[in-house]
Length: 232
Length: 233
Image 1 (cartoon, each protein chain N blue to C red):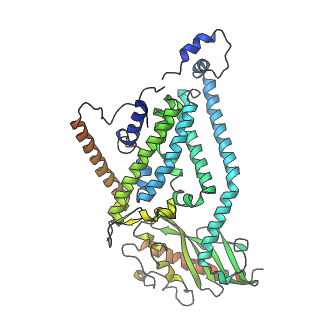
Image 2: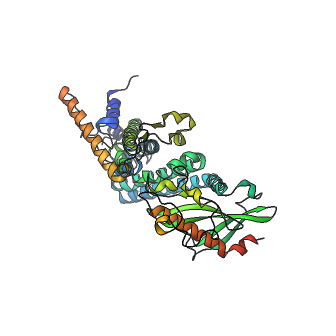
Image 3: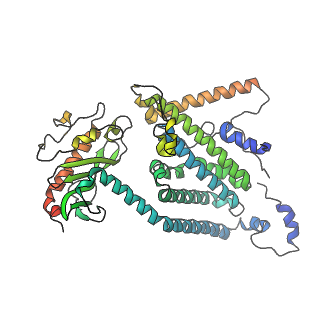
């Protein structure tokens, strides 16, 4: 590597005392262990400073965007006519370690109409998708009927398992109106397993995981129903 | 427009002769993961382009300060920091775009081509050729991603640039094409093996083209393993 005109500066160095940042000085410094350590530490410091500043500057905006996203996905499963409160502010956190919903605690967003609880919605995950967890959100009415289920994120095979998305097919709409009362436990399964829900040709694992997770979600609601609909 | 010979060489290297994917065979991990559709390829390519220009610029600016013994950790640190900053800024102010690209941005850290350009070009060259090199290598990478993404998308689903309006805005709805109506789909091409197969075809095609061009003009230096240009000052 050739340093930009390092040689010509070297000649001038004898006459003028040089600042340490000068090229000829740097060339000497670069081989010193202390300088190398210092530079590495310096860059680490600059990088952490930069990340800290960016984080401070963006965290409020990011939180706001995430809230908007969450609100949008909650509205998908919660008809606007059913509530007049702010879903994001009216929540109840319920321990759900045993319910296998993908989290130790589930935040339930409560929809109220004139103060009375009309429905709830919450996020849940199917841990047994074909490739990793399938994250979804579901809304359940006061009576325990499903208002809607939507997929938030998944990593299922494109072209096969991704028919659980509303963008690809309306399979997921089949859950609307189902409850623990109008289907027996055995019927809460894909057709291949003796249930009522369609599977996709070539992909059984994905719909099976979703159906089982939605079933668990309903059971979770049922267990905590009194607590939820009498809240506040 | 006048571009000096050395800049023209950087341009040709980045886009064709020394293309990150088709000649250096670098960055195959993000490449194969992302190129299921042409739109995804384009998004990943543009994000990588932005990161590549910034890291090349910063590495070149601080090249006199960085001792060669600790250069690799410093480059990795810089790249990871810049990618994270880009990720946060996009999440905050370009949220819709971030929702489409969000998955790919952290992947850029693992793109060895960025470290490769920092090491083999930016750390030895002044700032403006380094920025130019970042731009051209980034464009070459974007081109590779779009070509591979388009080929896989057409073969697997018969569409081209599906969902491009999510990435580019509603004005680009017109580039979303269905090339083969009622196509049954060829799933293999959307899966990782299809990526390798398609990449192999494209690379073979490029080498055939290069050989043909070299045969027509034997005096032109078209060897893919062309050395990195000497100092351009």
